[in-house]
Image (cartoon, rainbow, N blue to C red; front, top):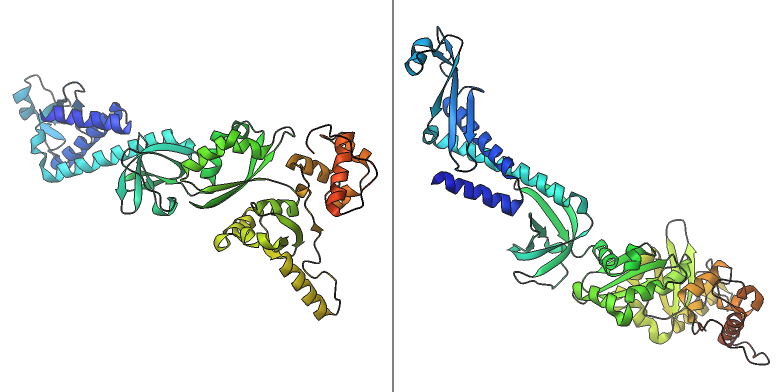
Length: 447
């Protein structure tokens, strides 16, 4: 009956850990051989046979027949051998079955250690085969409990740990809840392989977008950067490689369906999706969303890159964010140190510094960087259209207002009517005098 119980244990290990039964039987054989050598001494003159159907275990002790015995555990005299086999001859080998119950406590403990070691090795092989290629990807499992402050997640073939520092603040699970997380690392420990998960890593959010937005997995849209304040706010910069695909709209989805599915998964964390731009000033302004930026001046110094941003007086607190969160995330996303001023603060500082320098009226904040009024501030201006204009050199509203319609009409996504309407809108925005007549209707419907 004990043997049947042993088979049941091996079968359970096979089903729960995914370890092949042949591997478990080999581990058991190795353990019994170790126990036999501990109990009786000797070398390789033991053989173990296990019947996989009945669980019957037989240990055979083989000795060589000699005239004079010098090593009792490896040799047997001819006279003793003939007692069990009358036809025995010197030089032959003869075996005798051993009683497993006689192995003793020390031998049994050694066998137990060997089994554990072999099972750990087999489990590591299974885990490496199953999860080795999934590092950095999202895996799904079931919450089964908590150890100290770490969550234990059952991934099927093995269990994983979601450490406290990798958990979204204030989130909790009930036993049986389905949990998604990033497979952060696979470690070897004395207890076997250990899988480390994360729900706070920026790559977790990036992988969720890849699964939810087909255009990302297809390579049409690229995620240029992700920063997070886990559980509170995140910013994701995206770029479309197809001028006809709006990266932000694709990530948001119809009526926000795509981004809301991700927000639910990360327990209500707010996500700002930003249209990436190669122009630092434009990218910084977009990164400060939802605040509306009036001007950006950049200075790329030897030791740090500094951007001075001006916003409307009533937009200052929104641009900075609660506890500085918005500007902190924007700085992390763009790689620029960002100093934010309201219009009132900027003007007061400018006058003060100019007076001190004896050059009243001369700009003093970020004098080395270009000050811009964003193209996106123009009514009806989309990110793709703005990027096309900047690529052609029309990187400020002032340049567009002074442009020749024919030059803009040559650009992709623009025609004569759209170009004329755009220039008229820019002139109005800059406060230029009205031109005679009215602008023709847009030929693209974008402005």
